[in-house]
Amino acid sequence: MTTETMANGIDLSEADNTTMQQLFASIAAGDEPLQASADRALELMLGWAAQETWRFPELNRDAIGGFDPKQVHSAVFGYRQHDGALLIHPNALATYLLEHGLSAKQVRAEWAQRGWLEIDADKQTAKLIRLARDRVRMVVLRPEILTGE
Image (cartoon, rainbow, N blue to C red; front, side, top):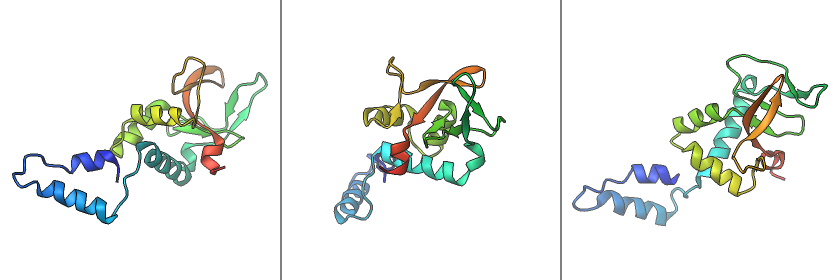
């Protein structure tokens, strides 16, 4: 259970606080542990990338040191690097997380704080990547995070 889900389930207008009592009883009983947004988002992201592999095609290095995507079409939301890193378009990530009740800004900040992202020196939660002839910002999840090493 995420903190967002828990907060959405609380009705503070109840005179007898039934919802609050049920919620705390559920947590105390260990029915469903609370899960940090960063962990839940990573779990969701890995599932999405595994289920919809065509949305995350592999990238190859080009002759000038950038990346050359094998596929470029509107259904691509990110890429997989040869080293196992996952590059995600920030807007696609934000939309996906919002659909699952999570804040992309909060998740990206937590991922960066945990060292799960490759970031530029300017400390943004996205990295500037040369993609074909363009330079674009991508959210880059480190390969060791994805493999659990």
